[in-house]
Length: 639
Image (cartoon, rainbow, N blue to C red; front, side, top):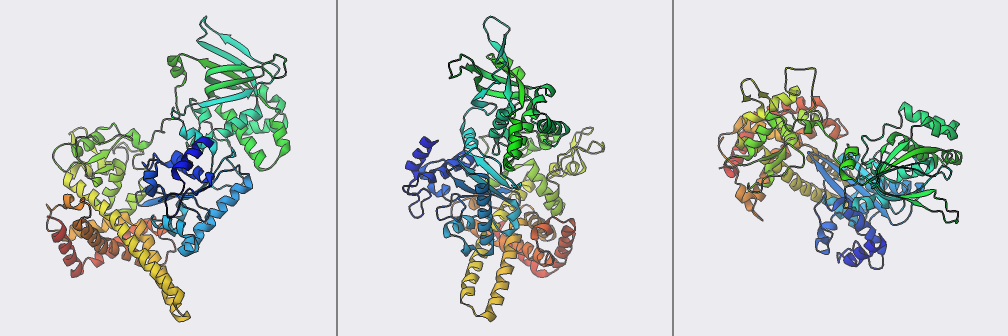
């Protein structure tokens, strides 16, 4: 790693010129670049190259940074999630890690109280995102350090430790279905029992006993937070069961009461490896009680190994030396299979954890209604729309698609509920259950919500779900309106930030009498800013209510050619008009209706809020001014 850091240091020292993220004579700054590279460069499609320094520095905070080295925003529908990092090129103890977590949280709290309370470098990075108090619950705090310790007492679910070993694993080119290399110790008494079933020794097997403490250390070392799994079990048929299971509890009880009997009560583990080499002791005795494994995985015994790892973790967090000594008395029978034939290894490695887990959405990807929807929208004349019905699929290269014409069946379903059914709550609420099969109801396709949108009548060969009935132009407009919301949200975000900044400047100069009015103004602007971030489905519902009431040009389409031109006047005016009519009105309605609710996010997530919103909106639509404003919008932007 030191060589890589030296290379990154030479590449980035002094960059960018105004606020360097890698300072001269500060080699450890390169560890932040290294972390960003291994965890985010592929995800964000950014090359680790000095030419990309402007992009990189929009995520990495130049010192002084308020204890936050990297700030990442991830979008998911109308929700935003934030990864917040403090990075230390040193070996941290538990207390150090806890202090780092607390430091980051204090800085974020200060920023939300008043952005001017945090260093300007951090303020500028955060200001380019949609972060506000409404998304505080969506923050995950990461401490990255050079050591192997990946747990600490009292960590919350949104507090994550990343080790140098985690980053190393992420940097490996081969599929992470095995541990690259380790040297382990046998018990020194039985040594190794060897077995081979053929002359060529193409398959070999060894039996030995491994110390429980060593196995526990191995387990904890190779559980990677960022991979979301333990690569020690990369080729296992299944991952470990919960450490709260009855079996795990019995193992803990055995360690506490009679650790020497663990070997007798436990079935042991099985390891598959590509190479095995017994290591001769250095004492000249000729004994071999340690061995080196390369590219290996535990394929049976994940439960045992995880239970030992969890026991070690608890003992170290509680500084329980007695428990540690008991764990060192534990031995586990290990069968090591050395496989040289790829086909045999494939047969043994039935399940590989490098594959993403199958979701309910994946389970419908081969259904006729999904294939038909996908094909009908991508084929034929413009507009062409690519709907991803299978994760990882990409659009055909011969079809020209605008940015908004790429979506997934999941997102499209959510948008359809908001637009065609005027149910913004359902759009948000049903995301996780939309593709779940309701086996108790055999009168619908998959489930009732899925049936509404995707149903295919097998008897009559009729695709009569809502999304099949809509024309390509109607689907295209829905996706474009969604893009207008996202662009409008950015427009209003800048507007609110400028207003809030001006109010803070006025607050510093105001007398006591005026301060209260300014503070009220700031509070109101922050509420509107929060609503702006989370009201996507409500804004789409409002737009389609306007459209159903006042539309006169049903065949009108937006001018995509002009919209997607660089520095397009049409684009600028359309985004501003959409924001000022539809988005601002949505924010105003939600602000009025949620006045008694301290948390906008909670109001958005309540079903009764949807009914209140629609009722209030219908009252508003009776005013002649709204009809005139919509017609002006339509006449100007749709032809």
